[in-house]
Image 1 (cartoon, rainbow over the protein chains, first blue to last red):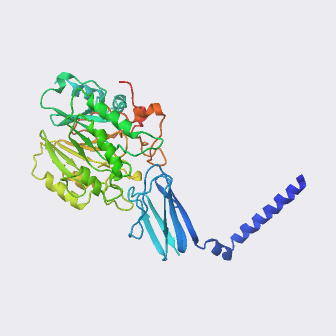
Image 2: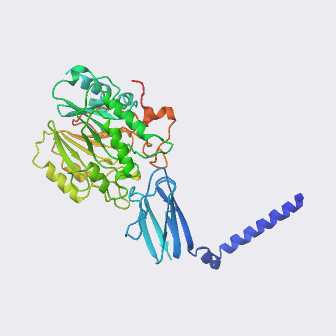
Length: 119
Length: 330
């Protein structure tokens, strides 16, 4: 590839990115971008849930994975789900069949809290 | 008294009359050379010292007695911060057994295990069998109640206790109270004692002479060390209100894997080292997780402390010190 072609390609890419960015700013595209995910992953790291809030669609499965050297739990404050203890690198998944806001915490380290919004 | 106690007091609280605990003096005599902490009660005033420190033979006479606090053994933990926590617990027990001054008993302030597994409790029991002090008192840490709301813990270590494992006993005129602040924790909160236990505590202390020395022990600190990391107990103030009238109150905790001390009026608060792995000083790391140190440094940060403290109406003193600051030479 010649230097000129590279310039053309990168220029084209820039234009495409710019168009995408412009489109992203329009309401119709934004609505699509925010449509709830069909699945989500939450990392447990440094005694915190990340992201702290996830938004998913009804029927979506959320998977938590513990990346700490310390065991944690994922427990719904309303008793909807309870992961039991998860040691390092262990996972827990829950499928949300109903819309709503689900608050949860680590019952071992209750300062750790998170939220799942199901739409 | 030929004065082992005074010796330590001089070292650590030399500036007490002016502006509270002399920080430099205090740090200077903090030593991290083994695992555990020995307490001597002399006239109701608890004094702690390093295992490594030689006992003055004369000092062990009289009605004084001592006991050892160990904490946070985390048997089953095998991550880089300490791949062999059983070995370091054994080191702690060897140190206890090697003391010329035999402790009357041992208090373990919780997190015996990492994952509440029967095999972990078995390993702990096996290791503790080697201790010369046969009487061992326990309170659970959150790691001991992970799987079954503490049923197994209660069966093994909490026979005859109340509720989730709280109890009291008397020893040579001192009243000891073991509290549980790791059960039924609420989202967003810290440690919790709960209404039922607080009620029991009030009743347990009622009618006791104000001159009875009181020792309270529990896993999570009964004072707010660092709320961001949950290092405190939401309803500890209520508990402490019941000991207000007593002349000497000592509070012993674990959980934070490092020494911290506070003296507030007649109440002395103290947290112990872990026998397993160190944790960072509050706010010095992204989280309270196990702190990795070079292998040759591990013994130092699991090390014992040469803290001593005296219950008296002194100004409030909190010592935050990175474990590596300790003078490891004795």
